Length: 134
Image (tube, rainbow, N blue to C red; front, side, top):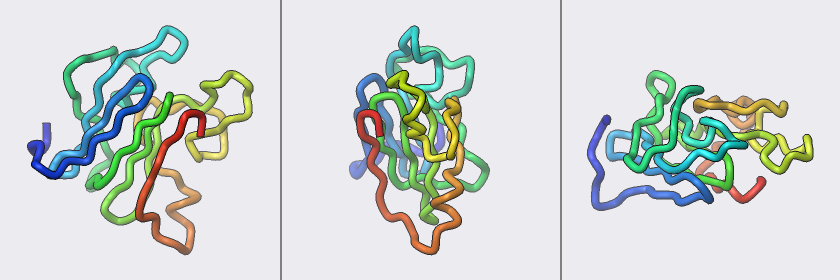
């Protein structure tokens, strides 16, 4: 695990998963997997399983996280440059129209993926917040 936990940690609790940012900018998640959700909730890849111990999420090379926010079935990560990454379920509610991950499609993401629309925007993101289904 890159970095240690400091006194000033960024911690987020979602419905089924938890996330923390280490001093070194790594993100670790832990929680349970649901039969209907598969491994996408923890962002640790398509073969991840529920874990009660924090496991590091593989971020793209050079990404240093500053914030994490866990929603009901998805997670958002903000890096030091203002880029937003998301992973989890895009259609958790089952209505086919959520697209909660911000990629313009309805595909689940088992690992963090850059939200391109925000990266290309003329503004800099300074905070993220993941809700229940949004």
